[in-house]
Amino acid sequence: MTVKILSIGLRGLEGYRVQVEVQEVPGIAAMVIVGLPDASVKEAKERVLASLYAFGCDFFDKRLVVHLSPPERKKHSPMFDLAMAIGILKAMGKLTAPVSPDAAFLGSLSLDGAIQPVDGMLPAILAAKKLGFQKVYLPYDPALPLHHLKDLDCIFVQTLEEAVQYLQGQRVLSLPPAFRTPEIIDSPRKHHRDFQSIIGHHQAKRALEIAAAGGHHVLMVGPPGCGKSLLAETFPTILPSLTHDAQLEVISLYQLAGEKIESGHPPFRHPYHSASSVSLIGGGTHPKPGEVSLAHRGVLFLDEMAEFAKKTLDMLRQPLETGKVTISRISSTVTYPADFILLGAMNPCPCGYLGSRTRYCTCSPKQIQAYRNRVSGPIYDRMDVLLSLEVIDFTKETRVSESSETIRKRVEEARRKQYERYGKEITNGRVSFELLMEKSPLANRQQLLLQQWASQHQWSNRVQTKIIRLARTISDLKGTEKIADESLWEAMTLRWMKTYTKQQATAR
Image (cartoon, rainbow, N blue to C red; front, side):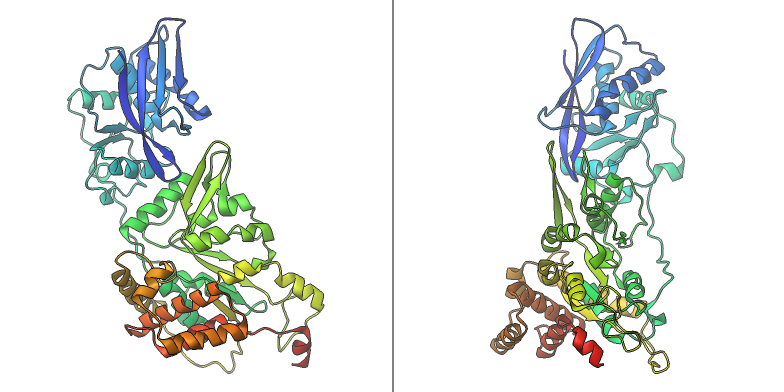
């Protein structure tokens, strides 16, 4: 008799139903696992047999065939151990109680029969909920925000013996309250930086507020020490907290990557410029999320952007445009979400002092042009805001800045308006252009003005679209229902970057 137990397989964040079939067949004693298992799944036979032996059942003299269906999909995780063990016990008559077809079994087994969590537990649980499972047997993991999964009955089992007892209807010893309610409580924000502490840069702060409100990408260009990194590191303090759905997405990605994240807060990723394309985009033999996916719903800060390999930067085109990244390998193709705000920072030239009032630039025009060309035109096109920063004269700057909390409240209100306008959790920087124009069409005079500026500055169609998105966000911050003329003007100035040639810098 063939026994069928259900589990969950993962392909990126996408989950699918895995049917674990177990049958005893005549032949040489062995346990054979088929269904395209990888090394971690093939090794399950030793873990499962050892845990069954610890449980008091010795099947070393039997020939057992375990089939993981669907057979055409590669199985990568030891998450199927528990389902295999339950299937073997059922097939050999050691478990007589029926196993519900709407129950899924997740978890890896230790040699002593203990059940352990593995990477990707949360996306597997979310997949089980989406696939219609009513119960999930799994090990306890304090990192799981299960208070967001109230429609799914999660049964925590610490050992194989506990799982069998529960299936047979025996009363399992109750768990301590902290163990039975694994909730992640959103901790208050603990930031060591605040916009109120940053002197000057009022235009840059305004631009970053607009970027936070609409999900726009920003490129900052300025000499060393002008405050680019400080502004970028303070930027997360004005971002709204993550919603429940966004938290689940982010935590799922971090679990797949084997990392931890503070619940409720937008992630901030700051890879070094020596990072490889695999670490930035994602990949590996079994593709894992890269920095662009770990920055999902948050910020990706590329300091010294021109120092990154040009090939690596060009790989950002797809995630910047679509909000997701596709990783293709021989064995499979995986798509991960990558909806982030890109903050780039770079110097105006290799030495960094082109256009400076206090230092002399030692770079030749050829060196300056080669340095700028490290960031390709398509990447420039995908940046919404271009900022030119200069070193602040502290003796002349007396204006008091707003706190991050004050700015964040305006950002949250602007986001709320966008969510209501589009009927879903999406910002002006990500919404489709068709829906944007349907909800906020430009007046004829505004279209003519934009065309004139585009012709003068040689802006592409993509840049013109970026300007309209910026204008919509600025209008949201101002509280106007339609795109105002002043908002369009401000959006166009945010796209214009002051640049200096070698001759202009010398003349200064």
